[in-house]
Length: 505
Image (cartoon, rainbow, N blue to C red; front, side):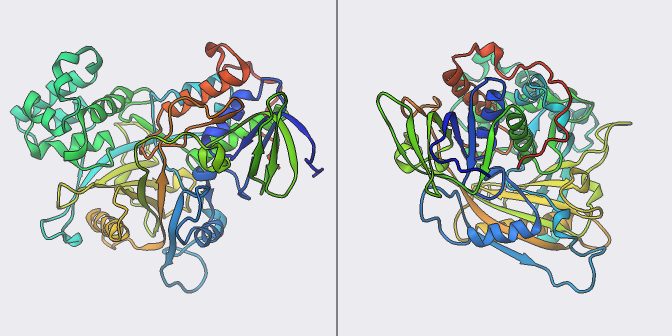
């Protein structure tokens, strides 16, 4: 491509992660001259989706401790089961047959991102699939994975009534809680004193739910913390979000996942829309330095030595130079330990139809309970081949834990083993390939601002479901750049023709 040196832009966006890509989408009809760069040679940033060969290169790059603030990943490693012969049943497929998501967050059906994709006319470039059942895996006191037990979590009133494991008293207590939680905002007096107390205290004291009934409800909250460390103010809104999302797009499920690589696919479509609107995309170039001028546009130095000028620069903290990073929250960084496992079985029992005559989901959520309740649980997102992330007769398990100590990877391996032994298949499924890594999450202030011209967007949070605050943060950035009416955010008229044949270069 032609040199960028000495070119002038209205907005330079650094990084193609989801927040930056959503900002690019929001600006795609603004008439502004946009340069979108990424220091990586692939799209997606921390939310990328990788083929097997790309994952191998990615793991080598992130194998050690990070040496600066530009990387949020570390301790990456890959393990592969012995193989012989050609790809086939029980063996890895070809590299491009996989699309492994670094950010497999699910989207509640009532997430504000979904109507924003519709109003921005990008939804026809995306396909969403149901996330169906929630499960619990319990291991005996000795922690033996071979004795692990898999149980389905009741997902709503109908499931509660049909659950034969609950007696009448427990069902009444649970129904009382469900009635409360779906209207919790109007019942502040009921739980105000419990906002900062453990969620389990609210369940037991106010609703008479015995401790044995707490894990299924906590599972719906998707809390990465232990039951004693999960406050009511975190859990109540999230349980309500899930329950009120059930039935929005179909009976029996309340969450969806984007096909072909999770949030990375949404980012790709957003970037494509900006490119159609005239935005210029360049991979393999990041920001090395920025010089602010009081009376003119800032000078932005790219990592290849080229210099461009722009009125605005936007990105998440790790994609901006250190001197321009956001003022950090007093809260410490959060580290998560994660793994991605390719399994030799479709694990069909994890994906039952969402209801009688309902759709067959492509996703399931499994919470592996720790023997020590003071420890955080392990969450496993199971994606079938219908997600487009792996070949038929296989599935992907995305495991994560808030444990970031030396035992973190062992905890994930044990959880995956317990899940595979609990599904009850005649031939125990095998992990054909796995990647382990740690990820750092840095808190930033809500306002997307670091200086007069540099806008720091929020990175994605460690939440397991997409945080609608990310979209709100992008809207603030868009308003600042365009001085637009917030009611017009991501509301576009349909373009003539289609974007299906337009590709990013």
